[in-house]
Length: 424
Image 1 (cartoon, rainbow, N blue to C red):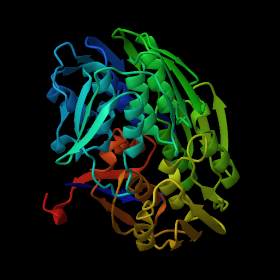
Image 2 (cartoon, rainbow, N blue to C red):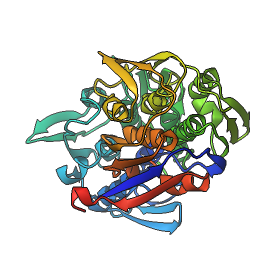
Image 3 (cartoon, one colour):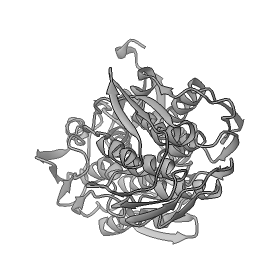
C-alpha cells in the first residue's frame, strides 16, 4: 500500500485545473448499456472507480479503450450478459447503477446486493421500489438482486427520501418505458442533471431535471452519442478549502461555480476572498485564522456531505467554535478521531461534532477511513507543523485524480511512498 508524506506549512499558490466528476462519470458509463453501440465520453478522470466500472462493462460483454488521456471509447454492441458479480460490486457500490441500464437495455439485471459501507448503511430499497413501479419483477436470491421486466410501463414514483442513485436508476429505465413516468422528490444534484443531459442527447424525452419533479416520456429506441463529463464540484471545493487552510492564493480552472454556491458562501463567511469568472474561480485567504462557522449537510442544493470532512479540517484551525452536523450518513465522522491525533479539539455528540479551533495542528501518523476522510487528513497535513503521514490512501485514488501532483503544482510538499508498516 501507498501513503502520503506531507511537510506542512507551505502557502499554496498558483493554478490548478479540475478533473471530470467521479460521481457524474459512473452513471454516464452505465448509460452506455441502455442502447448497444459505440460511445465516446470526454473529460473522464483517471480514477480507480472508473477502472472498476470499465471492468464491469467488460464482464457484461462490452469493451472500453482510452482514446487519449481523458477520453474513453465505449463499445456495447456485443453486450449480452446481465450479471454484475459480487467481486465487482464489493469494490464499488456505484456498480448498482447498472440495475436501471440493464433493465432498460436487456430487460434483465442480476446484481450483487451491495453490502455495508464505511460511512453508513446506504440501502437500495428505494431503487427497487422505483423499478417495481415501472413493471419490474424484483427478487432477492442468494445475495443477488434479480430484476426482470417483460414490459416497462410509465408510472408515478414518489421517493420517501431523496436518493441520487435511486433517481438515476429509475431515470435510465424510464426513458425506454411505455408512457409517461413522473419522479417526485427526485434528486437535484448536478450529476443527476448531467445524466439526464446525456440521455436526452441519446434521444430520451426528459423534462424537469434539476428540480424535485422529473417527467419522462418513454421512447422506443435510443441512439449512441458522444458526451463530455461535467467538472468535479467536490474536487473544486476541496482545493478551495486547501487554499483556505494554508492561507493561500490560487486560481481554479475548468470548474462550474454555480454547482458549489453553498461551499463558496461558507468559505466567504470563513474569511476567504473568492471571485467567479466563467469557469474560473480565484481564491485567497489572508494570514489571519479562519472564522468559525456552523455547517449542516443536506441534499443538493444544500451543503454537500462530501465536503463535511474537509470543512472539519479547516474548522480545526479556526478562531472560535463551530458545530458540524451530518444529516446524510450516520457514520461519517470517523476522520474526527484522526484529526484529534493531530491536536484538533473535536467532540462528537450524536451526529454533530463540536470543533474548537486551535492555532496550529501538529503532524502525526494518521489513517484514512474513506474517500473524503482522506482528503481532510491531507488538508490538515498541509497546514500542520512538522510531518504528517497519511496511510491507506487507496481511498483517495477512488475520487481524486493525481491529487499529490496537483498539490505539488501549487507548492505543497507532499510525496507518495510505499507504506512499509502495512506490508506493501
